[in-house]
Image 1: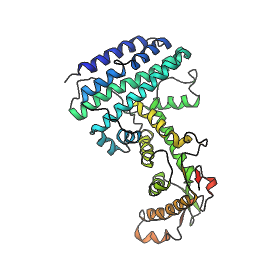
Image 2: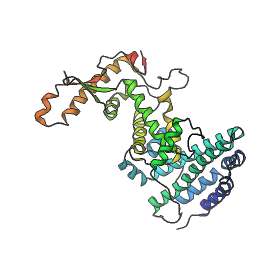
Image 3: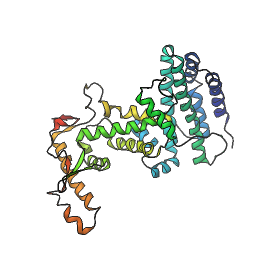
Image 4: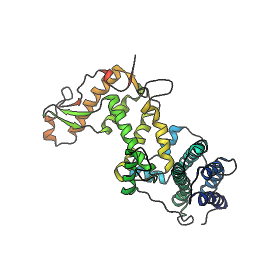
Length: 353
């Protein structure tokens, strides 16, 4: 089944700009493409009509929290379920329109200050995002309607190690084009975002390591154990976004970190903006730790609960005849490190009365 006229119209109009810019990106022709995307009744509005016609799906008017729940997968099994869900494609189309609009607006606002190298880098990002937007329609048609050949687009679902290496180099030299290739590697941001989330949670609650008091050694602390305890105290934590979505985005980042899986370009931008208040603090409170707040008593009970639950967890991992060596919950062999009680002032969060 071939694509409909709305899809072909959007694709043809975009390719006119793409073919003009690609040989020699300049701030002027890049701004012209961005302006076209923002122009009412054409550009992104044309994409919206094409998506609706091709997929027969609506654009949901839902909260950012719900968009995260519907658009981000947290495991391979969850990804397979979402690929067969209508809500997954509607949420992603909504996020594409949002982030493509933001990118186009940024290009229009800054094109006058760009040089030719910056224009090329911006063009590669815009090109990647718009292509992903068109591919989303093919993706939806293939999974929901069985139309796997009509669009003829192909997309790599894994990042090549060479691209990842270039991304690392870009980060090390601050993006200087004289020291690194300027190839776009937006998906590599997932690995950095994962580190930001993990260190934020660890230092907020001082979930640093596990102390084996019998062997007098330190062991790694798996963040999934920490999340399982925090979920039991979520009603006592003041967070700008639901804890379940922090966990979801963290696990979504793991897919790239462990397997190099590439997702849609707009998801990386939305994930960062969505979780930003956790990382750098909430607006109007000039404290980078203000994204996580709780009482001192809650913090103390979180630490105690973690040690009890971890004792149970370790016992479940060893044969029954060895479990006596783990120790009872009242005197656990495995303790948090630093060992509680911990001064709340040492935690990277805001303690409230």
